[in-house]
Image (cartoon, rainbow, N blue to C red):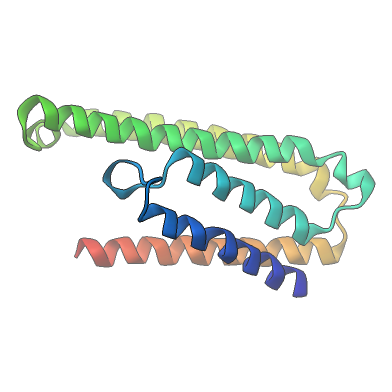
Length: 169
């Protein structure tokens, strides 16, 4: 638990400057974090997971594919967000309003959503495949720490979703 607490503290220390940076010059369009901010968050996540697991030298050899899958997943997510933002901006620029966005057909929206879900599924599958060899070598303590990190991450995701819902209301 001490390792998890230290990892979470490291995450908050890493994220707080990024939150401040959003108010200064590194802010992307519409107040979004810049690419450098997103890379820093990915770096922090990788370091936290690795620190929490306290890998042995033999386990350390199995880590690079996991880190690569984590980074690729983050990169693909950022590309999906940027694609959405550019499509939104293009639509507004062409007509000066959100009408082009509202005039998309439900079929187009479903197709785009299906494409995004396919990519997310492929990235998640690659991540699971990368984790498999290392996970088989983890001790019960390492598995418990990994599970605790997963629970914290899921709670953060759920609270983020709830905050977005509240702000939309």
